[in-house]
Image (cartoon, rainbow, N blue to C red; front, side, top):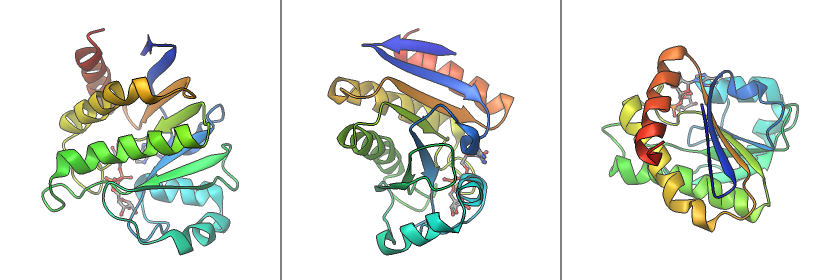
Length: 178
Ligand code: AR6
């Protein structure tokens, strides 16, 4: 599904965050130490190769809600923006911390003149955030920050399975009244 607002495309697709050939910056659902880990972080680090962990080392640890940028090494992208999402039920207030991830990632992209960004569904795997709530927060945060973005042309959400895609499509419609 795709909507266009103020010249910025917001798109939801089913796929693998580590295989987004046409995207300048992919977002990592990182751990605080910016190490390889599982899920999205595992997929990105495996595809990027050991140089990514090496570049990450001096930037760690990061805090929930924070985002940092690195090169993409062997990934088909130019940059990786690493975000630490909140652990649901542990890092509080979780709504704000999750919104901070999306806001901070898009501000970094704006400062780096990045035109296309692909997000996974941050915190909804190992960190246990209910997906519908997380998707609503993600889209609402993007809606709020859109007027600040001059460089972004495409913001893509890459969902791992059909159910996740459906939840995101539903929330995208709801938040943007599409
Ligand atoms: N592409 C797109 N989405 C994916 C992929 C993929 N290759 N793999 C998983 N997902 P998670 P978190 C989905 O656990 O909850 C790591 O071990 C997945 O189904 O990657 O923020 C780190 O090291 C889920 O909906 O991130 C951290 O310790 C979503 O992406 C911790 O997990 C996020 O799942 C971060 O946990």
